[in-house]
Length: 259
Image (cartoon, rainbow, N blue to C red; front, side, top):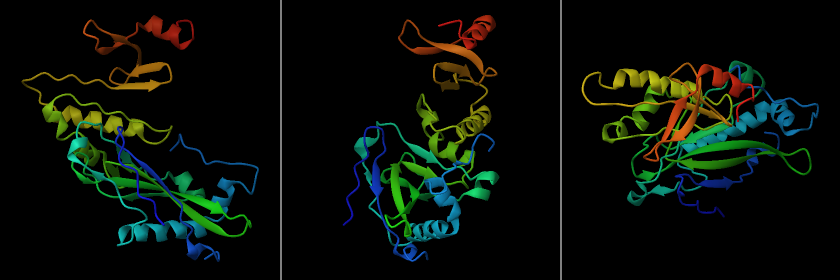
């Protein structure tokens, strides 16, 4: 039996863990990224890397299922009543050369790139390389994470910009929040969006305000001012503003001398 997927929550994304044992596998049939290494030759990473051909074939078979009539689980439906919520967009980056040399791609995209529309959502599937209790039988688990749109590794930053910001920019303020681990492509994506904005915003008439901040723990930097250190403050209207720190204060703050 296949469980029905949860509805899209307030954050605009649902999650369904879908455990499928691939019968075909049963008979054994960037500079900031780093390959996981361990002295344990029986660990998860070692098992995946040592049997990349077998598990890679399982990923390929799963992607064929996604592209065909078969679907591991129904995709949630986005309704008009959900328009006021934030939109969740996933962008998959390609493997770096050193990653592809030792490992394989375990992310599969399903669905479209219509960020603001209604109807079917999209999904990013993560494949886990698994070993049965007999320590001989290998199989794959496929876990689905739902979002409003999913962009594959072939999508350009311009495509992401047009889908996410092309329409909303004409109707008021818009916030883009990039979230992900180190090396996932946040800075690359945001820098590309800023470059496109420079050309897209009209030079005459109207008033535009653009800010780009990086928040890493307690450190906040302004990406539009050479990564200058800044602090967040509320103004009289209770709006949060980024305030640049004087050079001396920023240096002291970086050294841990300013709380």
